[in-house]
Length: 279
Image (cartoon, rainbow, N blue to C red; front, top):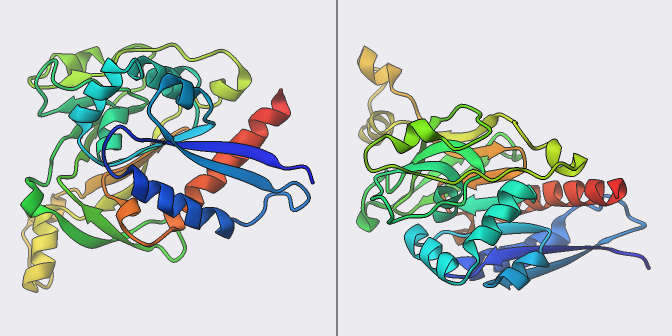
């Protein structure tokens, strides 16, 4: 029987890559077939070298320590290859927590030279927005792209998207002028049709978390008696998508819920099949 092979890599330099691989293996059998006569042959693999990355059709960058990941990637010659994967060839990529930081075009609370970014999402992230490891927490999230939409969000020294940045063809140079902020280098996108559909796409907000005052009010049992300033407080952005690059502040890989992995794999399969039909 003819099959469609798709290889999904998980960056395995540090962090929760094994947990992602476990959920990918659980998610794949649950995907509804896109073409019953030509089933998908999934391969899920750890990625540590440029050669392993080149075999991948899509990539997950797991949670962990973003600074450590970027340093190891740079020393192993993988960092530039990752930028090419995400920004030049525009292959489907998902980053969780530290992965979201690496995929952002700007990150604050970062010393110059202390953190290298891949880029791909026109956002500024606030690293460790929720504080230290001891301030980690779990909460129910509303994810409109899932059904049912409730999902347990696990936040561990998590970043949030602090600002949606303007669409630029080059670097986010205005961000580089801000104190303790680093930016990703610019990389030109390839000119083929499979890539061009993902260029200059707006950032979509996929999930928010009520602001800290609102969450505290719920915990304390307040019943709508907050002040005007409290009402104006915006929720924290904890999931975004731009074209085929997806980022989450929280850790789906640390749950047993495979629904986000199924949703993401469906999108990967659709894009890879479309790319292959166009060649």
